Image 1 (cartoon, rainbow over the protein chains, first blue to last red):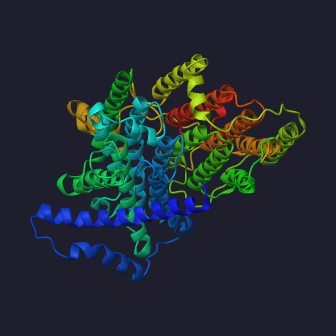
Image 2 (cartoon, rainbow over the protein chains, first blue to last red; image 1 turned 135 degrees about the horizontal axis):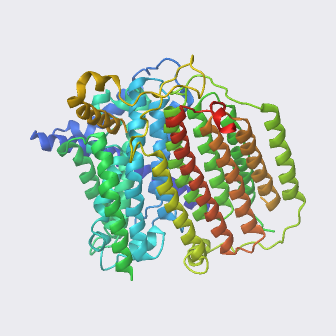
Image 3 (cartoon, each protein chain N blue to C red; image 1 turned 120 degrees about the vertical axis):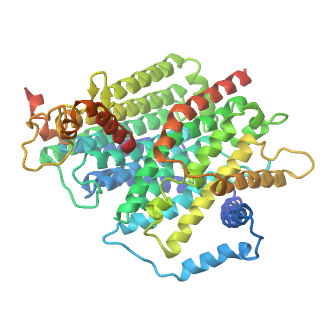
Length: 308
Length: 223
Length: 101
């Protein structure tokens, strides 16, 4: 890669994250007013910008003897992992930030590492409610990780490749959402869990007064929420590439198809917050281990049979 | 010999030294939680070095595996350590001088082997590494690969048998000490706790089963 | 970047791990030491695969076996720690005097 290509890739991923996170915030407000039956106000578009501006001028609160370095690291690491995960997803057949042989494994590794910043964000304030949130998230992460990785793995079998470019190309004619019907729901479940969004929000719930983000404020809180939104964007983009055929589609150019499919999944994920109640922690863990892991294994077996 | 650009050399030494420094900090830090995250940092640094050494798949799998393992380790810290939140100082070492001597001697011996031994100079091809690995795992080395799988299955069964809280003969902690830190009591010589708890005695014979069920529910909720 | 450099770093990782295993009292910290030792041997294996084995994929298979050993060590270690804590309420080695007999 030349230097120009490097800078182009970095700028592209950064832009995708900023625009994507803003879209998540806007979609969240828009879906909330649709569900509540209110008319759409113009404040929906400008609202997120106002929140960011408020965060920038708000003074930071702090706790007694926090681990300051780890606390500051948490949102940066979370955003960085979302960026790394997004970098391997191709926008079109030729437009791709990081074209590596093991793109799928890199995506999985970035998602697995995302446990760490969430735990750090809850542990380092040295405060009780965030700590409970952090431990809840570890229980949650250990439960969704297996279905998530198995669902990701299943798409590499028909493509006989771990490169996401090849995985999209292998869906020419038949998308994975039809070929492996269990894969996309499992993946979306894990995606919502990873960003602890909506029904899967165990660590940051209102019952913990905000959980891991109970003690954060100002710029830190803005970065933390942006990180969650970016993680949703990365997961939606990956879902579009791995299960909905990525850039494949008639008429429109490839990148337009990719954007449309990502937005559809993003609206599904964001909307889940306003139509579904939060699951209880123990029910979540039991469902993950006893129902979703067997389903995910079945999905891998279907993939193996399809690939034969 | 393999010719590499200067940037790769610099990155190699940076991440290599960083992996050793973070490994050292694991045993120097005050807090158990920090120790487990330093260990994770060491693994991620080694992962980057493996990436530079063209073992792309191994490097990413290592990072993926260790992220989950360190999360579990942090939970274990809080379950079993006397300093649950892990923000207070602690220092728990024994035979310190002998350990330092052992570590230094091992480093000198292994380092000397690494530096002075003569290894064959046959560098790997830079491309198609993952593909070749996949062919090997499901081809000639399939027996090795499957044995690893069987060993992991045996480990899962053994670990569940060891750690399961409810066995064939009831709760695993019946008859043992309640898990609490008690500084006055001598280590390891505590008298066993009677099987029936106070609640059950008060509830009488009819209520005993119900109370037992409720206690199990509490265990499940905490898990 | 050279074979010697990689082996030197691997030796340092192994030695730090050994120091931890010998010096720590807490079971979980001892397990961290073991992990570091395995980590060092993993790095040495990959270094030898890259520079001395001509890229034979069997070297990477060995690395995967090492990772499997690491996973087994961690799983069994955690299970044993849980069992010992349940039965003897011990979390450091000094509490296990009865094992001496």
